[in-house]
Length: 512
Picture 1 (tube, one colour):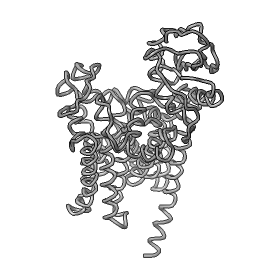
Picture 2 (cartoon, one colour):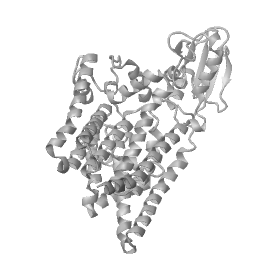
Picture 3 (cartoon, one colour):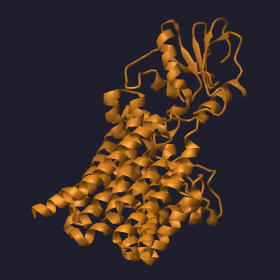
Picture 4 (cartoon, rainbow, N blue to C red):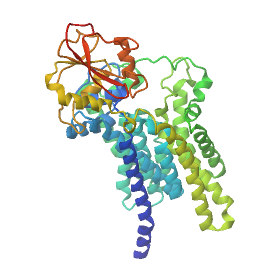
């Protein structure tokens, strides 16, 4: 028994070390390629966290401010770091790391360490996850939590967990929290009992269900305390009751074939799209050839694809419930596509080269799988590595505002900016980890008066092509295209890339 346990430790140690290396690499890469906060849904979640657990006065997006799975941990970070950059980034960075590591773990458990590494690297470096990897949105969080639940369930299924009941409780907590972050993640949940039932039986599934129920009750209690409705979130996502969803029009009224092709269209979109489509095809072929080994991935994909496609317009093209063209809705099955496809390649190479011996065929299969992930990862990296949206490529304009105001803000009256950038300056008036740097009043251009002498005007995204498309649009709605400034605004600072300009108002009372 002792020798067996020691052998397991020797086998496990390299696996854990590789997983730790992937986690560190993810954090290092993403901290280097940080994207500035985005004044859309992303910044709204930060605002909702500031109000949590109290009610939010925002009836335009009830399904968002009821997603406690992302709002509550963001609030916890806010208690440490205030209304700051650190608070904005901590949840996406940690849950992105969880998604990468959980994908690796599933690959190790169901195939090999090489498949796990290959899938994790391609997931981390692929265009879509990389693009949203530092944005405060619920989709990556829910996908990471659900994939982690699948990983723990796979370990329980294989008898690798010493404390089975504790592991089942962890699975339930992960699933429950994933729902609190993103409601339609529940479509993927049946995969977990499918993995577990033969191993743990009905009693084991009850251990898993208990924390899900507790989190559901906690959500209901919060809803009742804040909004007087225990089922507020259900009413929001179904469009009934007190809360109503805002209608979106551009993706309505398309042909059914457009909705049916939603997932393939999404996968084929980025530079590495052909590789992603190839892996999707390999995953589906794999389940036909080796169903006992690969069924999990076909089920994983189908559990989300079928309801999203039906709700997304296949049933009623005039009233789709979800937008199947939005990439991040498909995050929960990205691990399944990559693992299923790369796993099928690994199985194929092992089968073709089996005559060479187990050791040599395993090495060659690992090399092929790693290459199959390295090539599309490299293709994607050549695209995002030079984008101006990342801090590494110069997207530090808002930090420059903070530095300038920290030096000159004492002599400034009100700070004016466009209706989008004002939400970002609320973050950048504080230090990276909290602490007020400048406290001047913030006001929107074009609303409630005009800048006066002694005030400062911040223009962000003056030149198109910077980090914030929303800010550029809002700026041009106020000052025209290209932005035109009154003669009483004197330039006090400009970034070298032409994205940021700061003006002092020196005389008169020009229209904003």
